[in-house]
Each structure stands twice: as structure tokens, then as C-alpha cells.
Length: 88
Length: 88
Length: 158
Length: 158
Image (cartoon, rainbow over all chains, first blue to last red; front, top):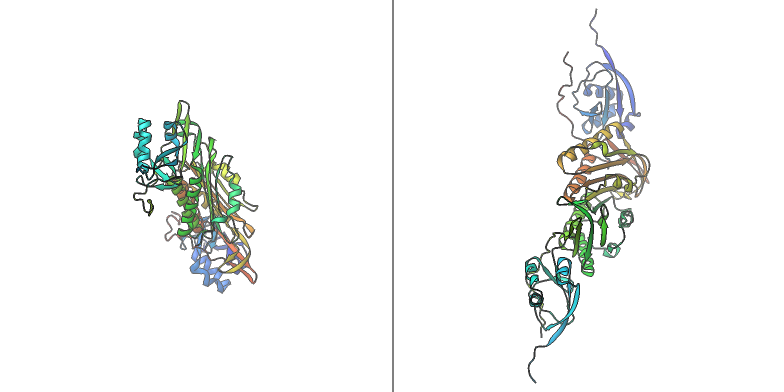
């Protein structure tokens, strides 16, 4: 059998100014298994180039916990891109 | 005319444990003009010897302001003897 | 910051304290933060079960000292308004004895000022607490206010 | 001190916050002090007149982070109970956006814990505020939560 990159489905959430820039609050996306959060964000930058300027002011979460950008993603993961928080 | 020590009337207030020890909350008293607060307290110790033990744990006030024990008292002054405060 | 003491609240009361009224008084649209301190009667003291407390004050001096605390707050912190209320008489377990509310544009000043206010009140405002236990009553140990050591201007010029 | 988080309150609400209810919840006879922080909508931001605000949250994560804050409070301070409530949606000038109440046997712990709670909330809880002015709306500048730099255990063993 040929070796193919397996794809998995993840849920992606956007908040605040990033939600406005992306134009939606969430979507489900098929990505290569074990892609990193960084690679996932790069997919969105390909789609919406202006997102690149937000990268340095974002933190990421994986399954509702802050996560490093090199975290790998697996089937069913929930990823969110979080602008600076301003609650309170 | 003979030189006599002039007496003046002051109001004296007692609070907390000191009020209990003296048995009253306030009285008006005639003392020599320009007596100090220390001398006034000594008059009360003469009357009620057990008051001596409170001396080191008291502060005094004159006309509703904390006052040094060597403050002189004049006619109409209001003096209070204040145990450690425990409000709050 | 100037001291709008006329808009502030300083009270000694014999009825239950109502925090909502006091907070509403210090609250203004130009503020963003209110910090409150609510001190109330604990059910025990030094491992003895408290039945109730009785508070007394040297009332005019206590009110003057509360105003002095507020004046210090305005000197030290960028705050908007202050309310300081102490209850007197008999208080049952759980009832509020002292309530302080401070409003400010920003939270750091509100926290600092509220804490300074209660810490200073406990050292300088002439109020006393008698604690009633099952086997008797005692005046609570307290803090000795700082006593002046000199008497500037105590004696008349004549 | 162990963490009685089950008795604590962590809420994201869309109706006005009622401080009295929250304070009543954290209040207990063995306590002596409650410190509250009330954050509410100021009428201006950077010298522009604010019309209203709109708050949104990553709700399940925000609630989890609020519980984490409380767990830290119990580790660091001798407190009794905590309530942390944040409002979402449209808020008018003067309305409370966040309310925190902490009860404790003694006041120092209550002050320290309440302040730690709001300071940490503002850095770590995923909530965002959009400010509406007469000439437009902007997402408020905020604080970037600390980002993990490593990914321990992120990859499966297989």
C-alpha cells in the first residue's frame, strides 16, 4: 500500500480581532495528522494573508489549555487562536 | 492679694476597660490651671489605685486629638484616657 | 488629588450596615473599580466561642479620625470617593462591624487605599470591642495608637 | 489549605451581576473579612467617550481558568471561599463587568487573594472587550497570556 499522509479533522476557533479578520468564529478543518499549531496557522495565512501580522500577538490553545506553537494536533483536537485578553 | 493656684474645670472621659475600672464614663473635675494630663491621671490613681496598672497601655487625648502626657490643661478642655483601640 | 470629603461618607451607626447603599454612593461613571472591605463578627476568638460583641466609640473623635484617614487616602492614592462606616452597640455573629468602600479610576489605587483605610482605622480610630463568651466578657486586646511625645504649642504665650 | 472549589462560584453571565448574592455566598460565621473587587464600565477610554462595551469569551476555557485562579488562591492564601463572575455581551456605562469576592478569617489574606485573582484574571482568562465609541469600535488592547514554550508529551508514544 502507498504511504499517504493521513488527514484528521480538528476544530478551530477564532476570537476578538482575529475573529473579525477571519470572518468567522469557528470551523472544522481537515489537516495532516500531527501537524503543528504553527502549520495550522500558516494554512490560514495562505487563505487570508493579513493574518500574518497578528501572529506575534497571539497565543494558541489546544483543548482549552494554552499550548506551544509546535504542539502537534490529532483527530478531534480543539484549537483556538487567542489575541491579547482584555477581560476584567 | 495672696498668690493662689487658680483652678479650672475640665471634662474627663473614660473608655473600654478603663471606664469599667473607674466606674463611670465621664465627669467634670476642677484642677489646677495648666496641670498636665499626667498629673490629672495621678489624681485618679490616688482615688483608685488599681488604675496605675493601666498607665503604660493608655494614650491620652486633649480636645479630641491625641496628646502627649505632658500637655497642659486649661479651662474647658476635654481629656480622654484611651485603652488600646479594637475597632474594625 | 484634592479631597472631596464632602461627598464622602463617615458614619457611626447603631443599625445594620447596608453595603449596597454605600457602594452606590462611591460609584461614578468616571470610575472603573471599587474595592470594599467588610469586617464582621467571627463566631470564635482565640478558640473560645463568641456569643456577641458590644462596640463603643469616643464618637466625635472617631468620626474626626475617619475623616483624617480619608484625607490621607486622597494624598497618597488616586481615588475618587470613600465611605467608612462602623457600627456600635451589640452585634451578633456574622453582622458587619465595619464597611469601607473606595472607588477609583483604576484598581491598584482602590486596593491600596481600601487596605490602608482599614489598617489605619484599626490603629487610630477610638473604638473598643467587648467580647461576650459563655463564661464572661472581656475587652478585646487592641492596638495602642501612636502617642505624641512632644507638646508643641500646648502652653499659652502669656 | 485545601480547596473547597465545589462551594465556590465561577460564572459567565449575560444578566446584571448581583454583588449581594455573591457576597452572601462566600460569607460564613467562621470568617471575619470579605474583600470584594467590582470592575465596571468607565465612561471614557484613552480620552474618548465610551458608548458601551461588548464582551466575549472562550467560555469553557474561561471558566476553567477561573477555577485555576481559585486553586492558586487556596494554595497561596488562607482564605475560606471565592466567587468570580464575569459578564458577557453588551454592557452600558457603570455596569459591572467583573465581580470577585473572597472571604477569610483575617483581612490580609482576603486582600491579597482578591487582588491576585483580578490581576491574574486580566492576564490569563480568555475574555475580550470591544469598545464602542461615537466614531467606531475597537477591540481593547489587552495582555498576552504567557505562552508555553515546550510541548511536553504533545506527541504520542507510538
